[in-house]
Image 1 (cartoon, rainbow, N blue to C red):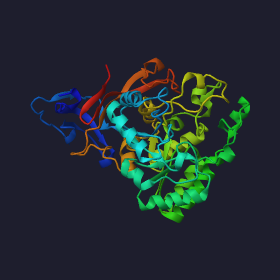
Image 2 (image 1 turned 90 degrees about the vertical axis):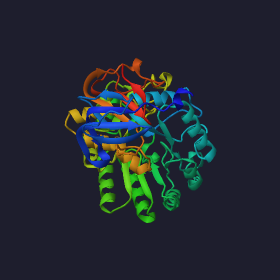
Image 3 (image 1 turned 120 degrees about the horizontal axis):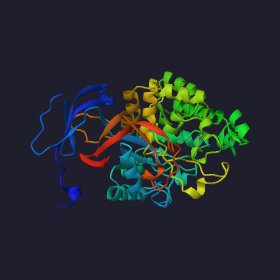
Length: 433
């Protein structure tokens, strides 16, 4: 029998701080895993015969993280990232489920491509991979895809990736159509007309650098339009990446109106601001761009309060040739699978957010929005679990990253908190040496 088919030994994680945001659980105790599922979480669990026992004293045991927005280059751009390399990076970052984006070649806009992604990931990845399918055919923003067929094939949500649908009638039809299938629409909120040739946040800092800016209004206006369409249609809507205070105001009004609206923020926008770009550091060129410190602080406060419900990596690998260019010409994007949790723990240590709220935004809430079985330590659920040493100090060396591309905005950054072990389906897929 191949090793991958041999049932793993029972696993007892003892003397841990158990944090399960799905149950508002934070306690000292043990967690028992057997046959790929969680069996029990309580104090003083006796180890079954033949079980592996791991002493987790001083560590946190939590549901494996679910990254709701990551680019993986298969099919068509495997030189940037493969399912194998992305899953290795995810496991090292405590991520047990990756939601990949449809902007591949070909675009994930039909059942056959969804099936290819699922089969390829099953054969090569060590973590769970689920695809989002394209919202419109070819991601051209004109003709809707077949939501029902794509959802049946395994698509967990619908998005046009980093492209915004400018035609309001197309978006209205998509929200109406998705409502009938209880499908989640995930939309990138940037008005391309206002964004124009902008390469960083519009303001004094962009002016001093001599770079064209992107106004925050480009995001807030598109989000405002979408919220009005949600009110018309009753569809489920998720803003892919909010970055500014103006968008938070729009989101709060939608929540007060009782609309089925949620939003993500990337770890880059939660942990960094426009000043970090410094002397034209292209590894910090993202879309949407990094905003002001006031925007960043407001975003973290919104995550802590639950107004913004999800924190994600926005993992976007770019090879060195596309990044080592003048800032205006460099490709957008930064990798984030391996640093999402570590950067988030910075916010915890700084007192900006509680650890339970951070883990909820990175595990339980994404699972609920996408109707996935993970994101919990409940008995009977898949044993997707992460063990975290919350206080270990370390310095990121890009050479140690498992992603194929090394375009990290956290080059040589100092962190406190690191993944000790990642478990998927009861099997250890990462253990720090």
